[in-house]
Image (cartoon, rainbow, N blue to C red):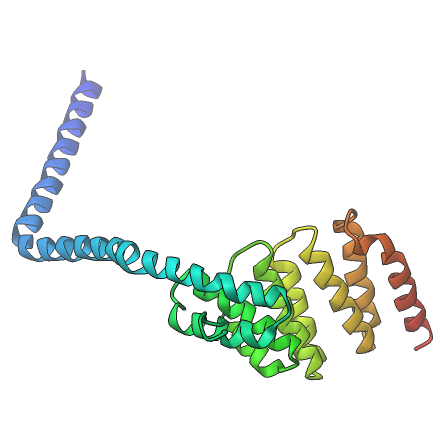
Length: 233
């Protein structure tokens, strides 16, 4: 009986605690009703504004940018880099598309294309600037942009930065195309730097993790070359 009485008393106490908590909450809401209403209103307005911005501003701008990108991409594929970058008089080039539609996905992609154009034109600093502006989480284009920054740094003579960007590109997405491609480039630069242990380790990563890649087919040759260079160092 004593145990039951204690349990009942504990149960009553828990109910009293819950009621007290609810009462305090009610008092807080009542006392701060105006402030809470304002906060909720701000949140609602923010959500509505976000969707309205995307629907009535970003979406139409994206459609415009996509139309402009069509001609620029066609010139890019034809290796007509000047028209791809600066337009043909009737259609915008990648530079203007990136500038006018930068808040859209096509406008962002224009930064990537502009960077590659400048890389092909051997304007490496401009290439870095535009590639750095590109923000992408695409499985292929994202790593390709990062790796292209590495290419530009290598052309500018900065092997250390080139390796850093090649490794970043390889780690950005572990797909069987970009990852082994940029690991191979990193290994080659390590060899140029005389860092043969790092080169061997990078080549071995290709052999172990990307067996079916094009790079893996001839990777033993590169491992052997780096090993021989290390021994003759």
